[in-house]
Length: 283
Ligand code: PDD
Image (cartoon, rainbow, N blue to C red; front, side):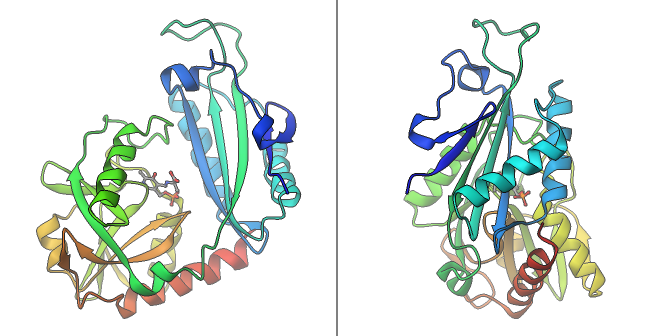
């Protein structure tokens, strides 16, 4: 069965889904994206993703070409047509197609593309064995709060991690971990969850917000501050969060074991709590 994608108002087989070579997403990475998890055929943390989409668009003086009701309907239609029980919906809005010129074109409608990816998110081997992480310099720009499709730094970071036999990169700026290549980064020390505060230096993760809220509700201690790789190596546990990984234990950094080199109890519990809540609130 072929997958169906959505491109500017049309549902088409993904092999036939096309965008102009003049699209500014292609020429300038002039666009933003979202990735929403699907659990039990429903959209997890959807409201958060739409809110962040509007914020990213606003920072780039762009507008979504469809209203919120239609956007939700498109997500649901694609999940239905592609029979996605568990997986991801990828959404991208770019400034649209216009003859190549750096400045914003007048009167051009933004392009909207969505497609789905069926994949296991809950019952994955990595959740049992944990992620290995490689630290790399964070060479990105200063507006990492915008979920921009300009991901070359993350492509290089994650490729370097893969080449080193790792599952994720942790990017380091000024001696401190900013975040993962496509995730937010955390350590746990003496029962306290430590993670970098939201700022322009990181993406404000939707999974991060949910996990921290759930942890607070359970009276877990949280310290929002930056940490170093050296501190992470002394931590009891470490983990990352993202729509694509939920809560994922980190058991090794740059070849050194974290905690006992096994997923620890707090992270395992946070993963269970998050998945249960995300499933219960998915729409
Ligand atoms: N990435 N930080 C970065 C740099 C990310 O790319 C992501 C997500 C996150 C986590 O955000 P959220 O919890 O809202 O998924 C943090 C997505 C999954 C991706 O690019 O595939």
